[in-house]
Image (cartoon, rainbow, N blue to C red; front, side):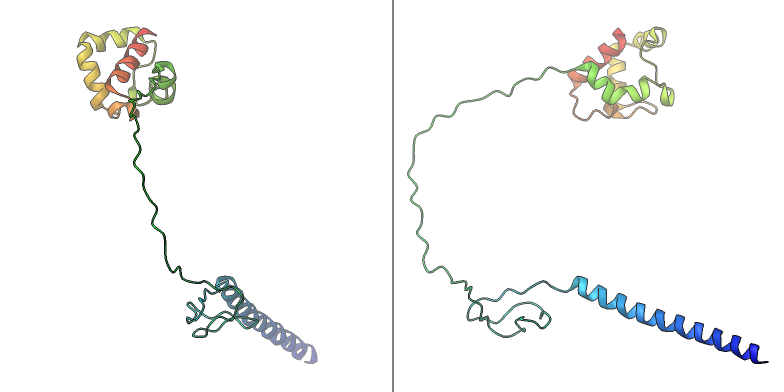
Length: 177
């Protein structure tokens, strides 16, 4: 009988200890969160009430008080307008450097995923018979499919930066392989 009472006491003590730990940890978590999100400081201008929420005690300036800090911010009394003196400048038209389009590199970046693996039924690079069938309809039809997309191929083959001339260079590159 004595052993049963001791077990009951042990269980009650364990449950009470667990409950107390949970309450303390919840309070600590709440305190920790409020510590983590409190403001770091306030902005107070000389001769004006402080703006913002109060900071904890320890040298802080409560809301509504004025700053007694040694740093003061004085308003600018007068700003001198800069004098603009017109000067004569010559405008020179500068042409952007033309960068040669690299069809092979663009193919690797934009086309290889499908035309190098046959994904979604795309004709493979180097399959001359398949490309001859496509070209039998005419290069105009092939280019229309490249620009507008066909079946699973997206418009412009996902090369948004490619001009129509660049796309034509890509088609020529693929056909020549």
